[in-house]
Length: 222
Image (tube, rainbow, N blue to C red; front, side, top):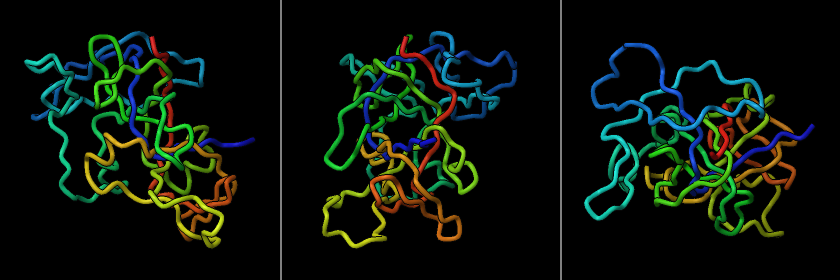
């Protein structure tokens, strides 16, 4: 059975119901409650047991001009570490929306999205009309059995002259890269080299496990 992987690319989606926790625990300072949406769609598999994380503050809102601003406020383009330990510089539950166009070399791209007013939106304000997934960093263990995987692809051309073994992925270099580009690409994993920390996809290119994320907890667009 083929396993599918997405590489980093940005877009927007309509949010399914993000049911808030019934816990009375107060979120940590600097965070805001996760926005609620329609009920979760569990047709794509068993719902995840992981508790939803609170969104960063300030919560998603419209600014005075009417522009939708995602949770956490302005997005920084300053260079920073964006590896798995930093959750690839994504925010909150790191929802990815599907069904978007992307740059050359990015197949079936996904976009970082957030819930607001009963819909999911990309960080550029586009509404998502497709399925959304919660994501987490891939590991050599979880990528082997993951049904859905995204990887942040590099911007070098996927040409026939690229030597075998060339790494075609990279880590986001800023919060802007992680949230606002469309370089999270969906591919199929063919083999995994846990020792090297890489995998080969069915396009015969090699990608870093550290640059990949797995998808779970699917939600219907509406």
